[in-house]
Length: 390
Length: 187
Image (cartoon, rainbow over the protein chains, first blue to last red):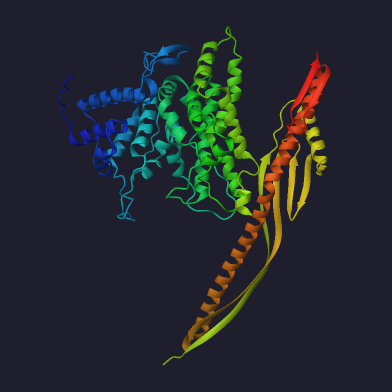
């Protein structure tokens, strides 16, 4: 093993370097929790620390892409060509630039006392972190955002991270962690009368459009395994959480899921990059395997819905349920169109490669998905079963 | 020394509440013929089943406050149930009031009684809504089956028309039980 010469940095610089490694998945949360909860002052980074940060981010980014699915040798599309290889091999001049946002985010994590406003010591005098107002600008910034949400997932500090405007401005973070970001803005209690459920304002067409082009598209493609796992887990209707024990919060999350996926697929369609939606097709194949009954699958996916209450509310909740399958059902039309791309047409190779990748679900699988969606939308779908109600 | 009295207060609430519930869905309309022609076929199929067609919508009253309405252009279905319910609640509350605080004590007792009456009236309205919802749920499975048959009927008629427009129909077999339709066309 190559020996790395030790470097000399200040304590605050060391904290920032350790947090950078953790955010990129190279250290566990427990290792950095003390730093995140504490305060330090990071005025700037010296040249030694800056060099170390660059190296840490660069190697961790490659590791992250490899782990997320980019290490497999398979057909990938880049720069107008379909080639077979690993994510970074097909784009040798791939540049994962980290911008000002990355530095500001890392500094914010080290300087701000996260978690101080939570727990039994919380109160009017408890320190609340200053908001992180910078927005991600580069593909590296998006990777760091997603990595941070992965780091704090399920921890007490997650609640403070998901409300930060800078984090919420990352389209890639929304694609990978929609539930955590959506729960942060769910209505705190059931209001009087009917309520309109608004989709997240941060997920814009422009941000999604950027996600399916240039280096960001390479990253989305490389992280397909992680994204597929995330959306397999997000297939079922979210159950009311401990924080928000009512159905309206769950419906709010379901609406956010639908909005994120629709915006992403629309952007991919417009950019001629439906191959990037393959992770959704892979997730759907897991959720609706061959032999599964549509009625039983629909029931299982909506088990988290509150029982009882007006039929109108249950029916509305079901219409928002299972965004994954609803969006994949729309891809069936695209599948038909891809199959009609002739060999002398532009995009033939990519169409064929996409169809081959979507074979994991196949024509029968797409039909099963449509059947499940039909069950979800059936008129008697939200009703208590007849033998139970008699 | 002040004396305490036992006081009883009676109160009642009488009101008429409007309870309602409903679901939305859609009849699947395949694009076999033009949208306008599909709407006409849908209208005919629904009229044959007792619906009244007017201004682009078909409606049927099911009794007991339940009605079905279909948008002929989109196939959207609304099933609503509503009723007016008379609610009557009477209660008596007994409590102790002190001589020097008689007025205040009675007022507090009255406040508690009013809250109890309001809560019970809300619960009675909710029970009425639950009964309405159960009555609606009992019909939904049958309504779904019926609308599925309407959808199949519309598709079958549309296919026959489409086949006629393509050429001469040599053979037409329809299985009423399974809904299977076989059309042979000489083009």
